[in-house]
Length: 284
Length: 128
Image (cartoon, rainbow over all chains, first blue to last red; front, top):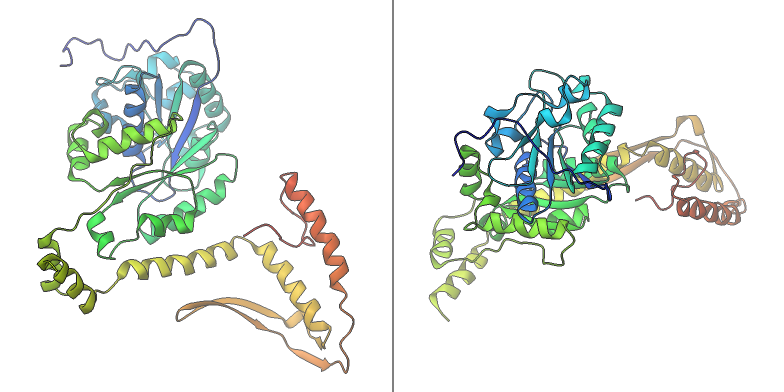
């Protein structure tokens, strides 16, 4: 249990005496909103940190801050990204230590500011500073392809694109991948797959999506009620061990870290009742 | 055959409307349209190539050529409207072949250098 008297916000990120090499800055993006970028960032960050590496999460969605909610850190945010970029506070003052996972830190977005207020050069420098101190820097990109997107990708070297099996989401990912170009080696997470619907031919399958996008697949996450529950509680699913989606996030984290494990997939096992139901229920 | 398998077959026989397939087809078409709208240089180049080929056989009104792309029922089509001024009695020699080879080579070299063909005279080889 988390002690009540934990000092608020006084983060002490790991400081290595000899700066070895820069960490990896990975932007999590999608183009379309609502496909699960923030959920993915929170869970992937948690899963990576649980592997024992240091991780900084940067919420680049200025004006629509949410990553703090998913991590359950909303009451601890005192300073934000723009405070640091505008040198009002030190980076250490704004980095909030996660309450569940050691080695995980959050730099929250500003809620009352606008994306256009972010200075692109300062953002690049900030991500580099974070890379000096953390092994992974995950940047939660806002929806869209305007200034917020540009500022979110400016400091990153790699990209993870999140897509759902919907025409609109795939189209937007296609556009974003075109904008990213070859430089970011984008890898794909397909989120919110409902194996039941795919089985019935009522949802684009993983193969359908990736026959069009043709990206290296990090993994597939099923649309599970647990995801909503974890959002309600502010406890990323990756903290748990009893959920399929949690296992998928851990496998994806392992793959991001370079481990040769299979990409998590979702499978549907049709039950007798399903078959009976679809026979009697007619065509929809 | 178990009852389970019987139901599988029956479901297959009665058929189910496959909106996933509809989604896939719509996606395929919309992405073609998107990719074309994002590559105006390529389309301009293709127009010029098209004119060059047609001009071997007939004189066309270059200013009034209209190339459009349209969703039609289940296909995405290119529609070219090329007004003809006169027809040649014999086709002019194919000019473009030897030149094209040289051009293609230079494009490949450019691709290897990792730069994109920027001038309008380069064929957009290598870009999907």
